[in-house]
Length: 268
Image 1 (cartoon, rainbow, N blue to C red):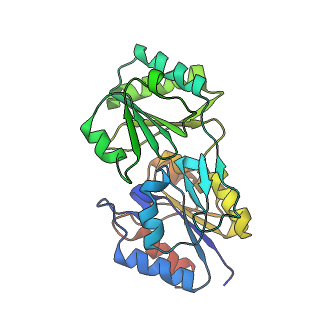
Image 2 (image 1 turned 90 degrees about the horizontal axis):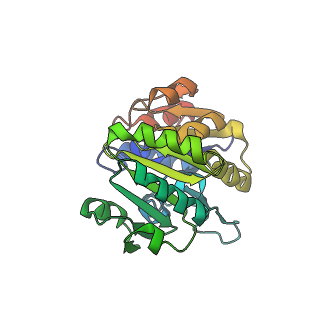
């Protein structure tokens, strides 16, 4: 069988709800690599929060982080790293405009440096993964570099209002996506970026055409990637818009959905 590229979102897809890779899924992915296929990660997470899974699966491919804003190859320096940040003046405008809305916090990430608008132990526990440099305080004063991504945390009822404002005022310069429960977060990256953009760079580097890409996802930040891939697969727990455009729907992230589809598709 010709070499395929298997692309894995992390949360809600490769990872169970306990944030682990199940034994069956791990063994199936290892069998896929032994059969000559490639596996890679495409996630909204920063690299520091996806590196443990990259290492666990002994990957040898580029990785897409921050929903396409940062693409690099941890094991091959000849790969041309892509890091496309949001313009600092745009971020300042967004933060300023949020004073008109109800929100809980704002987090900016400059690769692996984290800036938190208000002190929040829960958030610090999440973003402290991988031991980044953390700065707490008004982003308008402390953030000095163009951030890779900006996260706005709000109560669920206010998220649509904030997204509508971002669409009306800042649509030409940023893209924004919504995280699934339990955190009601709007994630912002530079306009024109998404996982498919990062995936296309990685696939080109590996010489694998679109028709031999199998991509798995579950949330709205996976839409472009699922549409781009030759075989776009929605997890059983995926949002309906993703299921509607997917070529296939598999079992949930807690039911070894990735393993079941690959065993069937790749005859593993």
